[in-house]
Image 1 (spheres, helix red, strand yellow):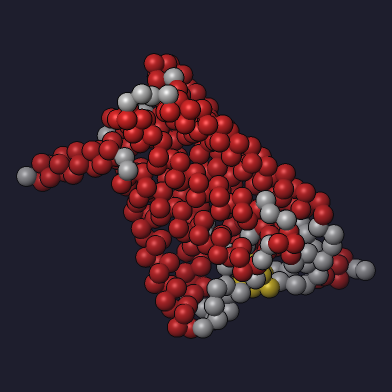
Image 2: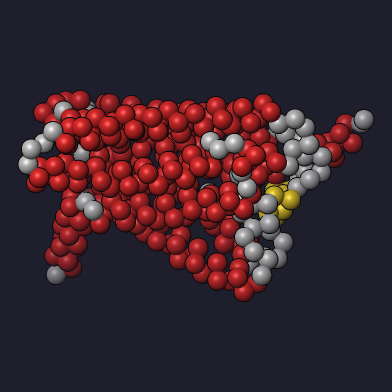
Length: 316
């Protein structure tokens, strides 16, 4: 086979995304829904970043990690939602090979980074509840920076490897993706060669960025729950649990949805099921995170009040 012929069989210049619906009215409704949700994500997570920057009282390890989480959520959602909104307005939903690979890289990198950051936040809560007297000494700025850096670096490295292997798969001219975005499992399904190695890599990658951090989170919260149950006063137990409730809610949603998608046997996986899970994780979770943290957190609400009061005084 000639080089040109081989390339024609192996590579495609663009992918066609099937999206969520082919009905024009449904797509218009989805455009409004996801457009409004995207604005809420930008506003909510942007507000957390702004409060951390303006209020020095939030310059604590917990909010340091929360800021990284908000930044990840903004970038993660922005890697896919704007294109999805454009596609709701188009009859033919296409994405170039290069853009598809770029989108896959950033979604995997940011998704992996988020799970690792949640594990770092769980460790922070463990130290705060189980070893409060040494909290400041243990959760030093240097350790916080190191944990954040490791989260970003592991997320990027894992994504680079998985993206390279996925985008290198030949599709024999097949370019219709039954998905709303360029996603690993949807791309692997297009391959016209044996994908056993890719499936092994996907599982290994899930172990690194999902299962191991998930186990660390579970271990941290096991110690936290034991420590809380040892507190004699009801008020003390309620206060201790209150410091972890927001993070535990976010962890349950994030890890639960991702593990359900990537760690189940391939025979049980469904393309439509994956669409719903990926959409939930891409849109719903980044929107819920700032709401959960701000509504349940006295420090964040107090910081917002101080910033609003300062702003009002400056106007007068």
